[in-house]
Length: 135
Image (cartoon, rainbow, N blue to C red; front, side):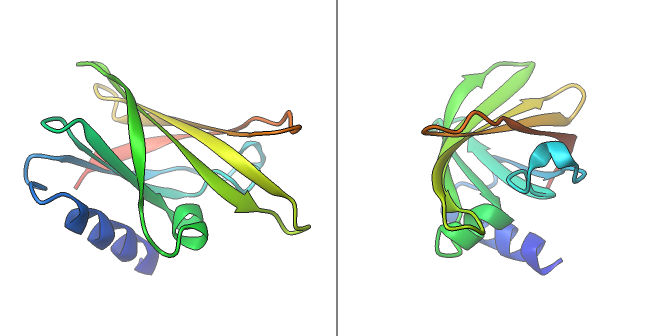
């Protein structure tokens, strides 16, 4: 609950015109396919007027000084909103990776598909699927 409050409050302050922005709370069941890089709660905010987007989850808050981060809007149609972002992470053995994230939100079904791919010499792909609700 505390993580949800931190994620939401940081995002609401990010856009002055938050009433026009789409804010989504997305729950992702934990699976081995997520590899610990796909977390169980994401908050997305997209302002269609400015084209700006912000994303937050536990991993972002941990590695980004407890702040949400900007995301790139890769696709914005009546059916789908796709956001991408990169986050430098360090795993438990001290290895760093510039993780590339992609979230595809399907408007009609209110579902999300997430993918995380580490940059560099890593070949893993981490994935998760879940449901979203507007907040």
